[in-house]
Structures are given as structure tokens and as C-alpha cells.
Length: 538
Image (cartoon, rainbow, N blue to C red; front, side, top):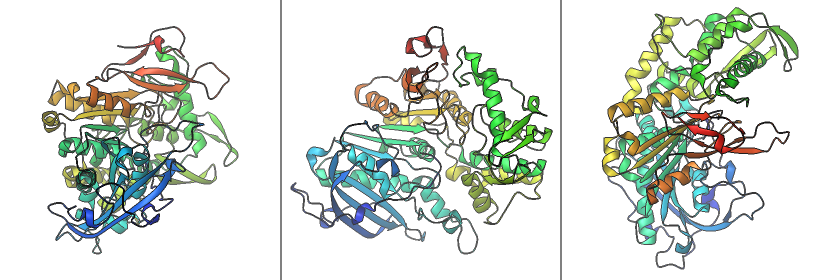
């Protein structure tokens, strides 16, 4: 899921009042009286029944969706038992909501449990359980211990202006694990048995949540899908503030048209390094495009309508975003973005003219620096120097790596319990640097050279954040690959992906490819670029 808050279009828990199931176990609060966990205090239990839920508007919900919509097919409906558990951790003064959904009739349950992940500061919520329910799964989700409609400062800071540690810990992993435990326990209570298989499926924050489960609570899931995972959050989050910081340091705030000109030029220069002209940089390591080559070039902008000349400062800014944060003395701090990744997400601007633009920072990183580092919601990069940025970066690591870093390469517990982890990342991701995931998988491999037995990672050329763009997108097949791995023992040696076709006037035409497990490289070997047989793994 992308970094954005998701509004709940329809409040599921107000759709209907409790109706007694035709099964032996009714969908009533009394039936779930034993639903509890050690270490929590339940303050409210709400159990209701909703009839004839349909797929109408399903893509507006919090869930990433497990099975793709099929055009032209009627929207299925399902009756569901809905449970909302509100609880606190004694002494922590927090409030967490867990949302559980169960197909109302046992015949509609596929005997599996799944959780969809969140995005940004959205840990999950009542809307997130809709998609799995419609596909026959028992499911649960959580608000992560904060109101999803609240500003980050409203839950991230205490009334005294300090970090709200219980809320951050809830969001990081604890509330996720508790929602899984509550959901699986409710499943057993309602159907009289545990699910045959349990899964996690998420992207972005959902990908980080999945990796947190793999590192800390792998016994809760048989299979975990973690797309574009925002792991190493303690580094990723302040790194997203690098672009606005450098913009003020260089005193240049280019309009969108200028940033797009750099991306277009780099893509055109490096597109055919892989042998195919398709608008995709599949071999970024071989691309050595220099932003300085555009200095002096004129760009015709549409909004606002005017012509602007690319300056040396603009080129330095773009090079900095591509390279990623570096300390004052040149030390590596975190990864930058690939050349075909849009620059405007890290450095959005709003302009009254091409020469008068205001920076719009990446919201997640802006919140992180303001709320959790500066602890001042009005904090800005204005006037900061390189020493200041380095200090903030070190503070993020020192204070938060153990809480939300999600970067431990030790997956030995996951290996021991037999859980499988399947990660993937678009190489044109404009929000979460792809190489951050490469870094994590590399460290996990160094920790255990046999990690590919239970953890596999796929790079997706030309794909932007969580499954968009013209590249080879595996987002609609990855969950099926995980199920086949867990339930049939089918190793994911390839991952089916769909991209825009090459050399056709039909903008909707697609081509299929089979992505390679890292460190193998998806490689064009010649022939029709629209044929899957023209690509191999080397």
C-alpha cells in the first residue's frame, strides 16, 4: 500500500446489528466472551453481523487486495461476522482497536487466515478487513494504537511534548501481533478450529510490518509477503527529508517540470543498456548519467506555463537525491533513488511561477523529523546546516532503531518455525529506495547463507511504489506464489509479472515476464521483447 491515509468509506460495524448464525456458534458478544490475551485489558467488545457485503468500492478500502478484480464479472457478496476489540496495555495509557472479520457461514470460509498491511502511518483499520473477507478468508487488522484521522503529532507526542513511546511501539509491531493473535483466536472460537494456514500480505508500511512479524513473531504466520518494505525505518525515514534539506541548503526549489526533465533524460540515456527500448532502466548499476549534463538546457513548463533554464544548483540537488544522504565528511548514510524513479515525491513543489516555488516534503519523513526527532510540529529545514542534518540522522538511529528499525538480519526464529517470507520491490520506486531492501536481503544472506530456503526477494524493473508504472509488476501474482510455496512446497524460482507492451499503439496492451530471485538478474536475451521467452535469469 502506498504512503497515504485511507478513509473508511463505509463503517462496517454499523451495517447491521447482531443476527444469530445458522451455525452452532452464533455471531454474538457472548460467544466471544473468552476472546482475550495476556497483557491487555479489554475495555470494549462489539460483535455485529453484516449481510450482503459486496466488492463495490473495494479498492477504496485499506486492504491491498489479494486477488485481482476480473472485469465483467458480477460483484460477489458475503455475509460476515464483525468483531471490534478495544483494549489497553495496563499502565501504558494507550488505546488500541483490533478489527476481526469472519465469513458468517462456515461454508464460505476457505479455512485460511490472512492479514493485509497498512501504508504510511495507517497501520490498518476496519476497512482493511473487507478485501480478505470477500475472498473467503478469516482476517483481522488494527489501528496500531492511534486514530487514523489524527495528525501524527496528536498521537506521536505526549501532552508534555515527549515521544509517545507506547503509541509508537504499538504502531511498530506490538498491535500488529496482537491483532493476529486475536483474529486467529476468534477464528477458532467461531469455527471450532484453527485455520489451516495463516498469511501476512502487505506493501510499503505493510511490507515493513511483514518483516517485523518475520523478525519478531514468525510463529503467527505460515507465509509473509512484504512488498517495497520500509525496513531500516530509522534510516529510511530521515533519508526522506534529505531532498528538502538539500533544496534549502542549495537555495533552489525547481518546479515539477524541471525534475521530470532530469528523470526523462536519464531514462532515455540508459533505457537501452538492457537491450530493449521500453522506458525501463533494468540495469541501474550500468547507468552513469550525470545531472550536470543538463545544465543550461531550457525546459518548457505547463504549470506554471513558462520556460526555465536548468542551473548548476538544480543539477547538484538532483545528483544528491540520486546518491542519497551523505554526512558532512562524505560518509554514506542511506540510499538514494534509481534514475527512472520520479523525483517529485521526495521533492514536491507548488509554484506561483517557475522561479517562485515552495517545497512540499515527503509527508512521512516530514512527520518523522518534526514529531519524533525535533518534537516540534512547526520545525522546518530553514537555516539548518550539514552538521544539523547529521545530528538528526544519528538521533533517529540511536533512539529508534530498536523500536521501529525493523532491520535485524537474524531470521533464525522464522527458519526454526518454518515460516516463509517473500519480498519484492519495484526498481523505479519513488518513495522507498529499492536498495534499502537489497541491503537487508544481502545482510540476511550474510547472516545465513541458506536464507533462500525460507526467504526470497525479487526486483521488479520499471515498477514504481507497490505496483504501478510501465514495468514488470508482480503485485497480482505474488500472494498466489506464496500460497503455492507454503501449501504445495513449490519454490518461487520465478515470479510472474505484467508490464506494458513494447512497440504497439494500444496503450492497454500487456506483456508477461518472469522475475528472478535476487541476486539473479532479469535479463533480455534477444527476440520479441513482448515474449516472456525473450528473457532469462542470469
